[in-house]
Each structure stands twice: as C-alpha cells, then as structure tokens.
Picture 1 (cartoon, rainbow, N blue to C red):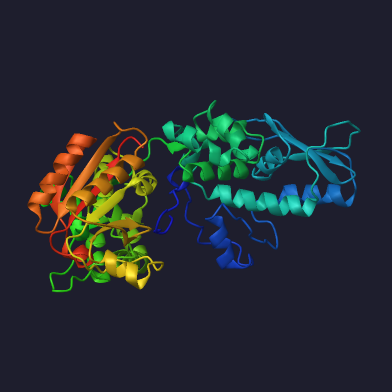
Picture 2: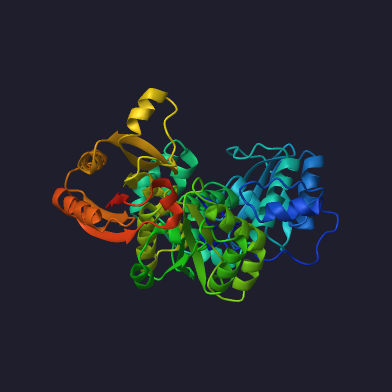
Length: 502
C-alpha cells in the first residue's frame, strides 16, 4: 500500500493487495531482514542479497552444482512439471555446455524465463543426460548470478496473491494520450502490444519472452502511469474534501456530497488544524477513499496541516480500513495552486467524477491535469492591496499605478498584481481579453464562477458580460471568503473559469 502523496499517490499494481504476508517462520540467516522485507514488497527495486538459496529445490541445486563442478555438457530434465497457467506436465529442460547453463525451456517459453520457472518447482526426479548437441545460447550469466537472481524472483512472485494473475486489464482513452511517455521504452511498448492481444494478466505474463517478474514490473509501471486500467477491483468510493476558502455555496456542497472544512471565524481567519483533519479523516476512511483539494499552500497552511495529519496517522487509517473488504486505502491530498472558486471549480469536477464511479487515483490524475487551465482574476475596489507587486516597478511609476484600480490574478499558486486600470469598465475589458486569449476557440464551453465582497451589482454586471461573450455552461455566484478578502478588500469582484472538455 502506498503512502499518501502530495500530487501523486502511486497506484498499486492490479490493486496490489496482491502481496501475501511474509511467512512467520523462515531462514534466520537471510540478511539483512529489514532489507529483505522492504524489497519483497517493492518490486521496482529488488536488490536483496541472499547468502544462500531458499526458494529453489535443494535437489535441483545439487544437480546444477554437480554439472558445473564437473564441467558437464548435456541436458537436465524433470519428469514432473507444471506451468504458471495451472496446466501440468509442461516439458522442461536445462541445457549445459562445459558446466555452464546455456539454454532452458519450460512449456512454450525459453531462456531465463523458463529457467526461473523450473527453479520455482518442487518435487519430481531430475535426470542428467550427457549429450552432444547444437542449441542456441539463450542464457549467458554465470551460475551464481542465475541462482541469486532466480531465487529473488521466485521469492517476490511467491508472495503475490495468486488472484493477481487472474485479473483483467484494459486500455481506454488515456492510453493514446499517454503512449508518448513510453515511446522510447521498447520493453514497455512490447508489453503494451501483448496487452492488446491478451487482457488477462496471467496470459500476458505467459506470452511475454521477458522473465515473469520483469513482465510484472512493466505491467506495474503502466498501471501506475494510468496506461492500463484494472478491471473487477473492489474499490471504495471517493469522498471529496475541500476547505471553506473554495467559496462554494452551501447548496452546491450538499448537492455534490462535498465536505468543506471551515477556517476559524476569528478576526484573522485561521486554517483547520492538523487535529481537525485527523478527526475528519478518521471518520471517512472506514468506508471511503479521500480526494482532498485545498487552497494553494502559498496562501495558507491548509495543505500542510492536512498532509501532516495524513502522514502522522496513516498507519492508523490503514488499520481501520483493513477491517473492510473494499481494497486498500487511498488518501489523495492535492495542492490546488488556486484559491477561491479556482479551487472550487476543481472540487466540483472531482465530485462529478466521484459520482460517476471514478476511483480516487484516476480523479487525482484528472484534477492535476486541469489545474493549469484554471484562471482566476480579481478586480479590486481598493487602491491598496496586500498582493505581491512586480519588483521591477519604480517608486514614481508605482505611485501613479496605486492611484488606479489594480487587477489581480492567481499565478503559480499566489495572488499578484497584473495590471492597473482607470475604472471598473477597463478592468472588465482586460479580463474579457485575457479570457479570450486562454481559449482555443471562442465557443469553447466554459464553467465559470463569479465571487464578490459586498458588490452584488458589479457581480451581476460581470455575469451578464460572461453570458454575452462566452459559451458558459454554468455560472456559479458566490462570495469571497475572509481568507482571501485580505488581498483585495470590500467591493472586489472575482472571476474564475475552467474550459471544459480538456
């Protein structure tokens, strides 16, 4: 189970509740034990060093060593065998040349893949026939390396839930969008090709000429990259969480089943504390995963406090979840790099996907892809603002500008001044032009939010302009929370929008 993450929690391969618990009893001389445990559960970096072999049959090791020590050429066979798909009597043989293993086959596979499958079998009678022959060399590594690597692979694969190999994967519209990420990786392209022919994980592994573990690792990588989707998993539904600075009306929060964590109501609004998030998360995790989208960390400590609660209590949450048969816990905490309705529009998109049954990791990836497309502007009615000013402004120029209305925007997660104008009409025109520039086509569907601080008439005026100039599918009217009021003051009107169909 992966830990929580800020912008991307790793997906588990084929929802990898796939690793079985480590056996309570086992070889005490495996060193070091903590490294062994770590690498058995992390197939991305299997670097365990064994001082002897524990998963390969002792009788087989004896035969292999004898052939090596005596420099024999011939074929080692076993009269009892089974293949990974469950069939029995898969023919298998190991070929030697002057004591070195040069080739192996097991059923329909050959090379190291076949050799490690032979290594994984127990029982039967091994027979060595000293023969002269000509065979392609598919294996070139020395015996010690083959035994160590094969033993490690078997150890990892044995700890997988057998149900892993019966799972089904599929591709969807995201596959074509993401294929460019693996275009230069021939191994991944090879596995993608196999997956287009075989949807069952076990069938893909059997069809691959790579070793079973290497194939599995490639599948893992592409599931984590959302190139493959795992079918038939029991997954918890996603609960969407945000904070009150998202400026979403209470009616929308209720309709969309969104939990909003409030800032304090003191004269200086304070973000929810770590303890507040812990209390909330603890109530949600028994039945649901969490996708939490918060105010930009540059504008408040909401994100940091939520992350602190998640990290500190994660194991507790996992323990609570393990009592339910709904998959491993996913706790996705996202820095929106936005504020006000900029965050709110992302939250509403996440809530819609949750209603449509999207899993939490897919929602996270979708939201992270939308963040760069969101725009938020403020027309401040005050000549002074606490927003950042460009350091390139000279004092005389700054003095003239401060006698004009500032136009602010959220950029790189913070609010900054982008222009100064003579009046509200000029400010509205600037924003309309910036909106037009951000759209690929004038009729691109847009979801918009209009927020204000005691400026109902100006907000209504802006709503009319948006409806006249753009293809607005929805315009949400709301108020700017006290959290952001300190940046702009009474009389401010803000506009947030998100092009749809990105």
